[in-house]
Figure 1 (cartoon, one colour):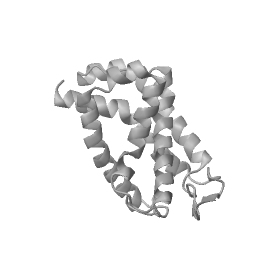
Figure 2: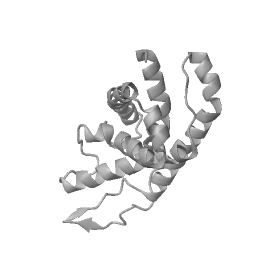
Figure 3: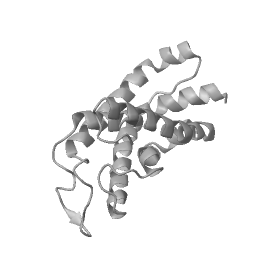
Figure 4: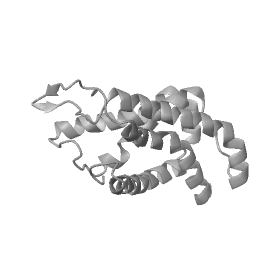
Length: 181
């Protein structure tokens, strides 16, 4: 697989996982998933993980996956790469997994004494990726192993941290986030 093809394919298949956290930030607010509960003297998740954000993020990613499936042939022809469509289980699994990965990272942050918004290098950049890939592997195993080949995974694990840092810094300067990570 050519490097450019792997980059295009990796970006394409991860878009439904890249969008949910951004949509959740824009939806913002609402009832926290942990309902304000604490564990070991610290919040379980914190105010930043809400039911509304999780729902809106998942719906935004699923909607994007459906749109991408509808245009895969035309876009693939235009860019010269065979782009896959998203089977129904992956339509939901990629964005939901991204949200669950982010929620899991919040849980780990609280357990390690980090407050909301505190940096956790590595985890902050890849939590949603690991969640998306894990949930999608369970929901659509054949599609996942066929689509996420080693070259595509390598691109994802290099591209994602770069995109994450860039979009978070941009959101910070636009006043959408209170910290640039």
